[in-house]
Amino acid sequence: MRILVVEDEEAIADALVHILNKNKYIANACYDGEDGLDNALTGIYDLIILDIMLPKMNGLDVLNNLRKQNISCPVILLTAKDEISDKVKGLDYGADDYVTKPFAIDELLARIRSLQRRNGIVSNDNTLSFGDITLNLQTYELSCNSNALRLGLKEFSIMEVFMSNPNNVISKEKLIEKIWGYESDAEYNNVEVYISFLRKKIGHIGSSAAIKTIRGVGYRLEEPK
Ligand code: CA
Image 1: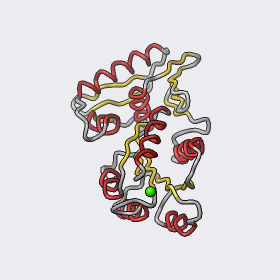
Image 2: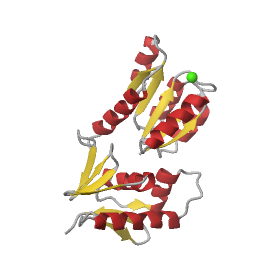
Image 3: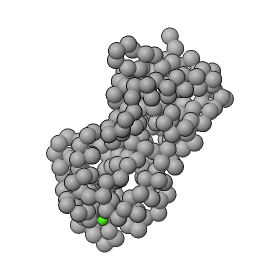
Image 4: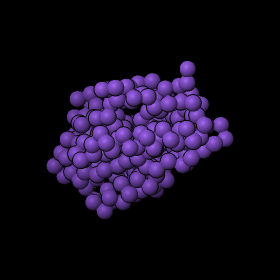
C-alpha cells in the first residue's frame, strides 16, 4: 500500500515515512500543499496523511481540490489540538479521519489499518485472503494452511496489490508506479524479478494459486481450477 505524507515539518514528515516503511507501507513525503496536490493527483496513492497548516496551499484546499477532481483515496488529516472548526471543515470536505497533533504513532497506524478494513477487502484480523493463501498485513506473512513465509517490502506490496484486486489483470506499468513510484527508473525487468520471487514463495508454502502472465498486458493472481 502506497501512502503520501504531506507535512511541512520535514523532520516529522521524514520520520513518518521511515516508520511507515518499517511497517511495510511504501511512503513518500511532500513538504508543501502544491507539491502534495500534484503528487496526490497522480492517483497512485492508497492513502494520504495530510497536514492542515502547509505553505503554498493549506491542507483543506488540497483536500477540496482532490475531491473535486474525483480522487477518492482515504485521507487522514493532521490537525492542531484545538482547531475544532478545521476538523469539521475537513470532514465536510471529505476527509476520512483525523489525528490531533502531537499524536502517538501507534494511534496513526491503528487508524490507517482501520481505513484499510473499511474498504471491505481487508478482514477484521488485518489479513487479505485469496484462494488458499492469506497475507497478514501486520506480520507480512504469506501463508497457506500451516506454512508461512515472511515477505520483504516490495514482495509484500506487490502481493497486496494482487490480493486487493482479485482476478484483475495488473499491468507492469501499474506495478512500477505503485511499488517503485512514478518518477523511478525501475523497468519491466525489475517487476519480472519480483514476480519470479513471489511465484517461488507461493509454491514454497504449498499454495495452488498462481500469478499468471497475461501476455502483453500484465499479470493476474488466479485460484486453482
Ligand atoms: Ca504544518
